Each structure stands twice: as C-alpha cells, then as structure tokens.
Image (cartoon, rainbow over the protein chains, first blue to last red):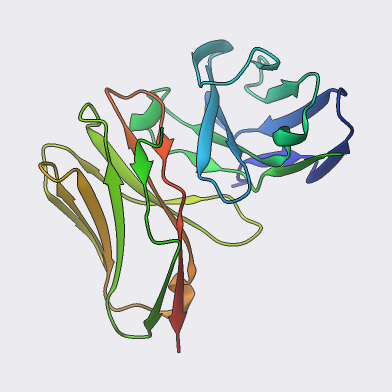
Amino acid sequence: EAGVTQSPTHLIKTRGQQATLRCSPISGHTSVYWYQQALGLGLQFLLWYDEGEERNRGNFPPRFSGRQFPNYSSELNVNALELEDSALYLCASSLLGQGALDTQYFGPGTRLTVL
Amino acid sequence: DQQVKQNSPSLSVQEGRISILNCDYTNSMFDYFLWYKKYPAEGPTFLISISSIKDKNEDGRFTVFLNKSAKHLSLHIVPSQPGDSAVYFCAASALGNMLTFGGGTRLMVKP
C-alpha cells in the first residue's frame, strides 16, 4: 500500500512569490493535515482538512491557505513568501477524521527555500 | 510560548542499555500524548500513545510514562538498538484537537 506522497520534494522561491505544495493521502484516508517544521523547531500545526472541509487551523497568517479535493488530495498555498517561510512542510493523513485521536501517517515532506 | 518542550536536543546511549527521552508540557488541558520517531529524509512515524487516564503504556521495547502532576512524559526504550537512532518527537492534544509537538530529541545508539 502506498504511503502519503508529497510533491515537489524541494521548492525554491523568492520573496513575494507564491508556493503550492501538494499531498496525496493514503488510499481510504479522508483527513489531511499540514505541518511546518522550521529549522531547529518542532512541527507546527498549520491546517486540517476532512471530507473537503477545513476543520481546524493553526496560528498562521491568512497567506497560508489550502484546500482538499474530492479525491482527498490536498494543496497548501503560501502567498507573499517571506524568508522565514523556509521550512520543511509535512503532510499527514488519517483514516477516521478524528483529528489528534487518529493515528496520523506522514509523508516525507517538501523542503521550501525562500531566497 | 512552547506548550510542549523537549529540553534535551540529543541523547547518546550504548546498544543494549535503556534510552529515556523526556518531555514536559504546560497546558493542563492536554489529555492525549504521543511519541513519533523520524529518520532523515522520511516523515515522522507514530510510535506509541497514552491517554491521560493512564500513567503507563507499553508496546514491546517501548514504554511511555505519564506524570500528570509534574506535567511530564517520558519514553523508555529497552533494550536500545542501533536502528532506534532517530529524532523523537513528543506531541500532545487537548480534547482531540490539533497536535502540539515538542522540538525533538536526537537519539544516537552506539553499537
């Protein structure tokens, strides 16, 4: 069974540009979560989507947004990129839509570098 | 304000000995705690969890202890193996809400 996949693996952008990161959950999983891991820090929760709806949002500005498609894949968009947005962005999926009570399976991440 | 803290950025242990990874939290509303393990170039993988109604949960070589009064969580690995070398993250949630992660501890198990 394929795990969570993310694309691209690496992404280099300049300040002010927009970045789009993609995530495909494990087959049958309806929930997708996005996390940011900046250098030297733990994972910071960004967004949770379930059944196409945004269920929860972390403490990030509105220029971080996303969506979930009917096939449960998801996109994370970061507008007006700033240098401090440089980080590893991790996507996770879970089966039951129970948020933190569900086991979350992580993808390998997208490394975003903002120059 | 870091609600979940892992104060040791790294830990080195001899193969066969016990590894103890520690985690402290400040939010008394947290009622569910997890440990994840992360290898380089891979996403974190779930290891073990514990509900606040328990003070211990075991799964093979891994045991998680919860001390609610001290707001302290620990992961014991016995015996430690070289393949356990990874970054370990503790995480917590309140009422099934979003996970809050600690900064991670890099465990190195020497053969």
